[in-house]
Every structure is written in C-alpha cells, then in structure tokens.
Image (cartoon, rainbow, N blue to C red; front, top):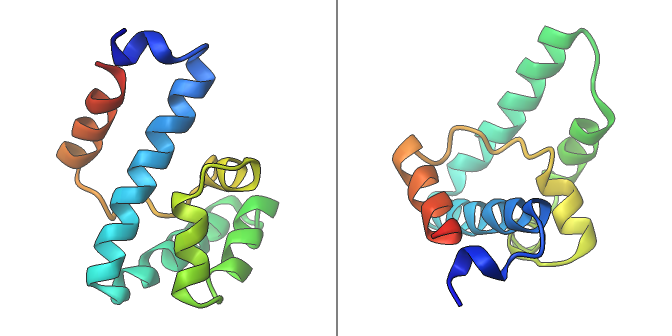
Length: 109
C-alpha cells in the first residue's frame, strides 16, 4: 500500500502533513531557540492587522510562554489537542518553501 492510500480521508492526510511540518519546526528550534520569537511576532502582527486577537492565537500566545519542552511536545504530539492547536499554528516562516514542499510530498506520495 502506498502512503497516499493509507489516509482514510483528506483531513487525516492534512493532519499528518501538519504534524510532520511541526516535527521539522521543532528540530530547527532545538538547534536555535531564538526562532521561538517568530511565532510571537506573527501573532502580534496578525492581531494588529485584524484589529483583535483571535482566540486560537491568544491561546498560542499564552502557551508560548511555557518552557520549550512543553511547547515542543504539542508540536510533535499525535493527539486531539495538538492537532487542534496546529490548525492555527503561528510558526509560519520557520521552514522554507522547499522544506514544506518536501514534507508535503513525503506524506502524500
């Protein structure tokens, strides 16, 4: 069975792409903790642009004040809460387009 046929639906496949993406993000942050500033800046920029703080981003902002091991555990976990949080991830900009494409292709092919 190929990788693409193991997904029962597109939502499951998308969840796995997000999880693999965040595993790669966690690996980069393991090497350079200063990258943790980027999701906070993203949240503030998005809130400024929208004129309000979306509930999911407010949740991330509080969560990003926790120790790195706790943050990391959510990035890589395969449970309902982690999947929910990754749907509104503020970690945009940590991976290159090439890295994201490679992950997406590795999950779907």
